[in-house]
Image (cartoon, rainbow, N blue to C red; front, side):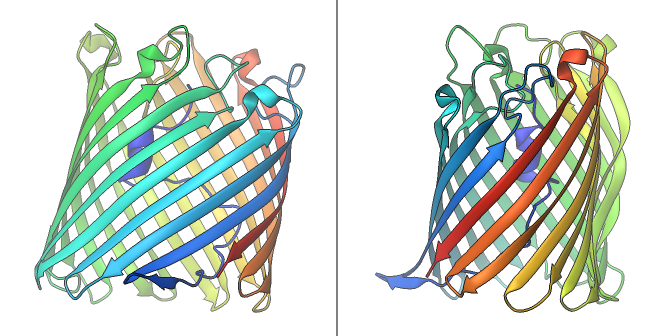
Length: 388
């Protein structure tokens, strides 16, 4: 199973890139005092290498996706609650054994205890299948993710100082037959503490510490480790038409079995947007960190950078262009280094307030020191989004 660490993406923010600008917020309806927001996405996609195989053996297919999403929200003076379900049924017309349905259920809540104290918690469940970079290249990776998180914030957002702490627990389980991916199953416990200090009205300096414990279920798994990150940085909002944050520091990965695999590295996270015009936004995301290992690797050094340009040509037409570069250096096992380059673009036409049409294209080129991991991939999409 070759993908970025799911815990990092869940807790600390994913740095994946969105092909299209976000559509207008769909309308909701009142259901027994709750705001109910339904949404339906339909799309047809042609993917010329949906299993990311070498060009000599790649498999292509037309893929039809039906993606409903339902959100229930309730807000009181001191609390907010949100329950959201999303499904995604995908039909691979030229490779029917890849057909699957994904499910995601999330519950989030924020409690305002008083003006200086806030409590937040979340529960989540995901049942997913993955065709891309699967462990066995002829079948999907099938897995579930269960997680629970708790956070506490002390201080005002516009105050001089603020403390934000959190804990998260996650279980990753696979449903592939014949023991495939059993060595990837794990429980993960993560802790985080962030201290903010106001430098100006719109800018805050920060110090952050994270500690994650990865416990793999197979006995004496060499990937069992503790990951510790110390960061300093800043967060700013609407300063000279920009907003964003950056963090830089050092990351240590210490393994339970064999200190010879212990590793440390410079790490950073950058997320910034610039609006040269009120209807145009340029966004930059960059990350350097460890990901959990796969195959024979015990860890992966990941460096990724994504550049997006979203532009509203009118109230109904929006476009997006994007570039992506990613380096993945696999530590331990067979020597391997991948360089992934990608670009894409798309157009969204807001046909009516309740319906939008999307046309998009993505291209990926992965250059690996292992010939069977080198590939190109093109994805063409035509979709419709319906809401109230």
